[in-house]
Length: 439
Image (tube, rainbow, N blue to C red):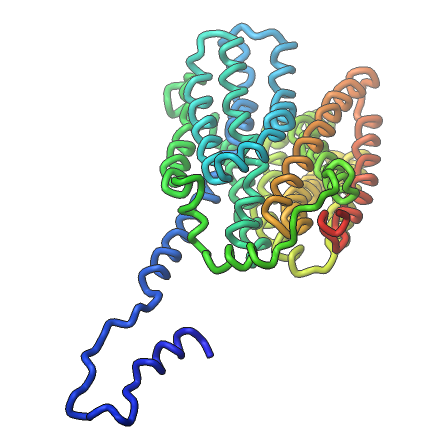
């Protein structure tokens, strides 16, 4: 018998009660008020997740769109400019490893709020820093906020939406892809509209951070306790039924290493594609404008597919087939660039856009490979920190091979060859097991 049924039965008058003396009606303590609060907090949390995801890439892609103007404005050498483009994955690896400790001490909601504040401050400070060193320091501040939020967003999804991991990861991934594409495509037109000053073109993206901070303030109050009331029953169930965190160190988990390798190899492919694909097309005779549009097509593919793939992944017992399908698209795309880069340019751009959607698949598997919120924190920090470290040499190696070979045959061969271990790691990471099973 449910609690509500018992309450209603207790208020029914018994047969011995005189009909002429009805019991005064007492207000029944129903769940209306808590339910309304829970609905409101759940919706606010969903908005917060979307806004956080929108803020995780504009600091990078907006700078890429104006890198030449920034170099001229700050009198930056080519070596420093190259360092600037390789800083993001390094910061993601270094600062992301601090997320579990901060999350345990402050709560994930508070750390995400701090991350959004760091992104906002970095974006506001760096255009007006007044020198290369200060510009790099402000960029590092924004990247630190991105790194912390990168690690904790799968944790937020797992903790507060345990029965909707695929849907919420898809929503988050789609918003991240949208923010990436929007900053890449709109930064130059926005800069022109603001008078052509690159400083304003970079600073304008801090407005997204201000919105995210405003939403995460109530969610993070009390170390995240406000957000956790969105589904108190689910939290209580999790506390009763979730097994303890594994005694096995995360560095000894085969599943964790498979996820880290898969994450790192897909990030390698994404950074290589974003950094070098336009040049591949231009060297094949495609105009600069068309090469830029082709890159935009590749990036935009992530918007709808980032919502579809996580939902599909959570409905499958193992996610290996998805990893294989995405890897096959990458192999065909790189083979096409090798054989006929200009003739099938649009097809290769589409296929590589599909292949780059291994990122939302990796995020989804992070949420699925642990039974507990604490386990997801550890797994997310390990997979992303190690993965971003793995991704650092790839774009540099491709550039070196291109410079020394004088063409794209060797770099494209390397790109295609890297898809094979990515597919293997995806199959291993997609097995139906958790890190608790290995403990």
